[in-house]
Length: 161
Image (tube, rainbow, N blue to C red; front, side):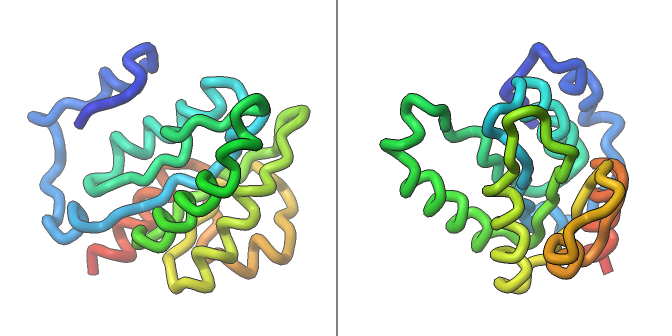
């Protein structure tokens, strides 16, 4: 497993010799890592995603790998959305980090990705600290949990039948 950010303390946690026996079927499953990017700090964007990549034995589609900012964003907005939709369509599940938005973060893209994935028949798990989720978010997800670890485990259990 290769991690993009070696500054994260999470990269040290992966040791292939200690990796548990994983059902080979799970290695063929892909998850899309939905969560806020706009107006978020580096750590808010990447820390939970890197943890998910360590825990998930298959492919992780990470929209934060694409550049979006307010300078270049307008020029590549259509491409950005279309690439997100392609990756969601190619995934088997959506792991959503639905945190209380920081100042300036609207989570519009994340909120739209949830029903998009659900309507395409994807397994949707929301990780949140929000006390009251919108009925629209709650309706379009299969599970609501409080940690990335719990969310990954539920997805593993769902596919590892």
